[in-house]
Amino acid sequence: MSENTSAIRYPRKRFVRGLLRGFGRLALPLLFEIEIQGNANFPKQGPLIVVGNHTAIMEVAMMAVYTPWQVEFIGSVDIPHEASTAFFAYAFGFIPIMRGHMDRKGLNVALDVLKQGGVIGIFPEGGIWEPGNMRPQTGVSWLSYMSGVPVLPLGFTSARGALGKAFKLQRPNLRMDVGELIAPAKAPEGVARKAYFVSYAEQVMGAVNALLPPEVRDRPSEVVDERFELEVVVADPKGNGVEIPSDLWVTKAEALTKLLHRPGILKIFVKNLKMPVVPLQNLHTQPAPAELVPGLEQIMHYLERENPYFLAYRFGPKQAEEMQVGLQEFLRLVQWAAGKEYTLLVKPIRRFYSPIEEKEIMQVEQGEYVNWR
Image (cartoon, rainbow, N blue to C red; front, side, top):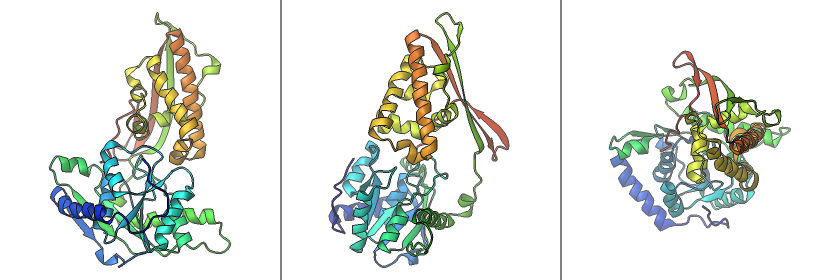
């Protein structure tokens, strides 16, 4: 999905956005129990950068509907939007940005909106594939630094899964807490700008997280000391074990296994990018090697030719490189097994300590993606 990246005359789409905001103010209280705290902290006008934590679609809806100005959102276009959200994204409009590198084209459009006294909406965590474990991106720092505009933090609670509950007429709670303005980014003399941008983004997300209720903010991590390993057993058509040639070993097994245990990422390949990756999501069902080849080939093509920043944006450059090498090695192994008509038993093992259950957990089945709505 794309949007014209020429300069925006702010505010725009007044009729459509006014209609959507008005509809939201009527419909949301019927479907949800809405709670807004800190309205007095809303500035009367822009320019302003509004930020929030991001675990589900309802945070975007709350920011659009319950803030007192027309918000110009920054939205990602590095992967296609799901059909269920694309209509509203098209209708409302947003500034497209390619995640994974500093997309100056999109950021400059946002900067121009701020120069017009506009309000930019951004979620610095940059995605929702690992809620609660996302590191803030530095786009908010760059925008605030270049424009000299303050940042308003919003804390959203209970958004994840709320839309699904609303469809079941459970009327879940949705809460938005409005914080105090954060002074514009201004790098101290002698401090590297890159390091300062990271620090400022962390300060912004710290202010956002401070708005969350203690039971949410102080919730202990569900996963401690996470480790990964890969077991692969090969058998010929008669069931006899086959030794894997040394040139087909998966040397980046740990990184590969971590990726295989990230259902939110595999879901993107399946649902957003329409790749035949379902067998790769269900290795515990022992799919035939030939079933794994098409999905792995399409993933590698996508990572090498279409979106080389996909993994780096989500896992960092070093781990992304190891994951990509692991995928390539795994593809070669699977192609070899398919050509020989061998059976391939692949067991991606994830181990971690659960403070909640107070015990060590070993997970082999990759698990299902918990719907973000």
